[in-house]
Amino acid sequence: MQFSIVTLLAIAGAAVAAPSASVYAGTTKKNMIMMVSDGFGPASETLARAWVQQHDQYPPNYMSIIDKIMVGSSRTRSADSFVTDSAPGAVCFASGIKTYNNALGITTNYVPVGTNMEAAHRAGYKTGLVAKSYIADATPAAFASHAANRAMFDLISEQMAGLVPEIGQNVDLMFGGGRCTFIGNATKGSCRTDNKDLYPLMAKNGWTNIVNRTEFNALSATSKLPISGLFSIGNMPYSIDYPYNDVPSLQEMTKKALDILTEATKNSTQGFYIMIEGSRIDHAGHANDAGTHIREILEYWETVKIVSDYIDAHPETAMVSTSDHECGGLTLGRDNNYWLYPLVYTNQTKSQELACNELLAANITARGDLVTNVIVPKYLGKKNASPKVNAAILAANSTSECYLAMSAALSVDANLYWTSLGHTGVDVNVYAKGNNVTGIHGNMENTDIGNWITSYLGVDQAAVTSSIAKTNVFQYPFKRPNTTFVYTYPGTA
Ligand SMILES: *[C@@H]1O[C@H](CO)[C@@H](O)[C@H](O)[C@H]1NC(C)=O
Ligand SMILES: *[C@@H]1O[C@H](CO)[C@@H](O)[C@H](O)[C@H]1NC(C)=O
Ligand SMILES: *[C@@H]1O[C@H](CO)[C@@H](O)[C@H](O)[C@H]1NC(C)=O
Ligand SMILES: *[C@@H]1O[C@H](CO)[C@@H](O)[C@H](O)[C@H]1NC(C)=O
Ligand SMILES: *[C@@H]1O[C@H](CO)[C@@H](O)[C@H](O)[C@H]1NC(C)=O
Ligand SMILES: *[C@@H]1O[C@H](CO)[C@@H](O)[C@H](O)[C@H]1NC(C)=O
Ligand SMILES: *[C@@H]1O[C@H](CO)[C@@H](O)[C@H](O)[C@H]1NC(C)=O
Ligand SMILES: *[C@@H]1O[C@H](CO)[C@@H](O)[C@H](O)[C@H]1NC(C)=O
Ligand SMILES: [Zn+2]
Image 1 (tube, rainbow, N blue to C red):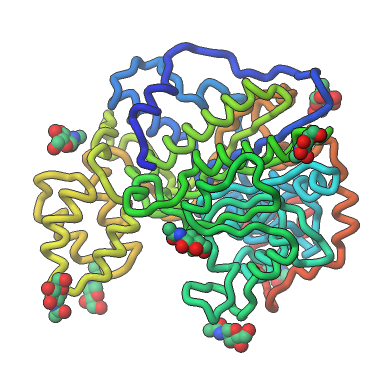
Image 2 (image 1 turned 60 degrees about the vertical axis):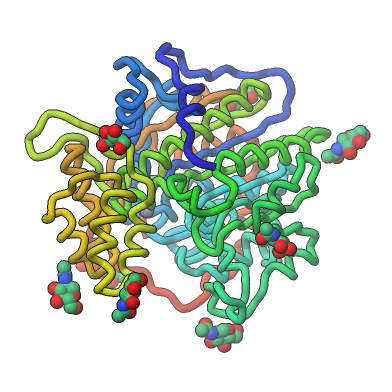
């Protein structure tokens, strides 16, 4: 599904509304929707808002759907660094503890720690994970796996698929990308280091495993859990690239997941707990690709709109939306110029990722024509580019050189700047709506959010921690870098 202006208009509105944070006392049933906008810092929200304001000529007081439910901010550091990666970032939301960079579901001493999703599943909640990255990638993995390093994909996928007896099956629904970690290395596209196919083993345990849109469309609210739908071998495409693919969008996956989880918990006293990730807001930040970044954010807004409407119809539901960290070091304004022109990105039609793949795959003789006549005018949407801009892109030999050259081709015109191809350590915004979210406000630690979820759900995470103590968290021998020179604080091992 292509990003649609019509949908955007539908969610626009200039009215200032107070964040909704009522305490719902109707039943004891509770649903929890955790939304993670990966790599989405405050400047990214400002940029997306500015693009919409300029594009649709909205007034200065226009509020995006998330602006209306902003409740505070979160600090993002991990146990060993002021600049976190997504693994310990998500562990804060899933387990309420800080751990070292790259760690999943374990303490700084490699001891497995239970997650609120595992505890919720043991308490009878139905659980789900929806992401645009690999489903075994750091953010979704933090809710249902335990590994010394996020790169231990074989181990992580088996844990998430419920194939590791020490932790059992904790996830009822998985929608996203990254099928490659579920198929053995004898099959084309696999990214496992062994030849183990997880799908037949999951099927034996009752999973329905689907891989394409036809099968996705055939799912109904009454489809039986557990269900896995991994629609890409690697990441799901960027929103801007949906026209080149036919996979469900984040909105579609979210809607379907909510329908199925609602139906599956219809008769139960427990509700459901789902984590939904706008994973690739981060990837576009890593690529310094503002046009793609904006569209990933707009897609995330539309997904929040679906969740927000769901809460209006199901007041026993709470949602929290935040980011694990900022990505790209985005600044609005540069070179001592006092203006911003986000509309520069309106005519971009393809992500820098796909454009760079195409460029670097082309032979040297074909590249000049490709850059001048296709990539710059059509994909980046920049008419009348100077020979210097074209030459800079043509000179790129590597993906990161290509990203930087393409980024610069537009960011000078937009008067914005990226300071990094990676994460930064700034605080991020926190948004919340629904059942009993009054406790989420102000400047928080990232761990406060995970601990709030555990307390909201009323589940026993400590009991999970005791029961999973023997889980193997090493796929291969691993030694983490000594980063104590960066920062230590009392309690860090
Ligand atoms: C594929 O898996 C087999 C068996 O599990 C292993 O021996 C082999 O090294 C793997 N090959 C690659 C390229 O990872
Ligand atoms: C979807 O996947 C199913 C099962 O693998 C397969 O039979 C079917 O041909 C696929 N459909 C499309 C349109 O790719
Ligand atoms: C809920 O209860 C109704 C009536 O007993 C039953 O028909 C339905 O299958 C149940 N649904 C689920 C998901 O258990
Ligand atoms: C986008 O393309 C249209 C059609 O070519 C053009 O009229 C418009 O000025 C372009 N917008 C920007 C911001 O370059
Ligand atoms: C380079 O690519 C162009 C366009 O795809 C093709 O026409 C040409 O034959 C290729 N040249 C070589 C040397 O492979
Ligand atoms: C690209 O690679 C070639 C040869 O490997 C080298 O001569 C050239 O300087 C490189 N260009 C850039 C921009 O690094
Ligand atoms: C709201 O949450 C707090 C803990 O965050 C809890 O003590 C309280 O009982 C909850 N109230 C309702 C009505 O669920
Ligand atoms: C880690 O590095 C710091 C500073 O370089 C050093 O003081 C400390 O002993 C190192 N720790 C280990 C376990 O090597
Ligand atoms: Zn990242």
